[in-house]
Length: 139
Image: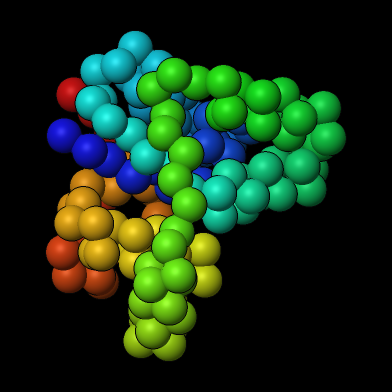
């Protein structure tokens, strides 16, 4: 199975005082052990997660720098970049779904264009998009 990983899970795992920290840490442990199958992450999601952590009151530069190194060195996360067609689709999705940020729209575009339905996220804004199945945990 192929999953796409959202930035809110990454930020929650990094920020120990986040309300969803324990859940996010369990998810990243499952990914790290290879139990989740193929897990994709986009450069947009990495940028958003690092920014959230760096400028959080509980985060900072040191934590976001460590997070950056961990994300890029993980053998179970595959970094993908959007094609021009996916980026164009993201723009259309962004216009159609006012609750989605542009980064979330890029995630949806990637998933729809590549035929991936499974998303790991705590963000319920994705629930209004047909064809996306959001997962908050792994059993």
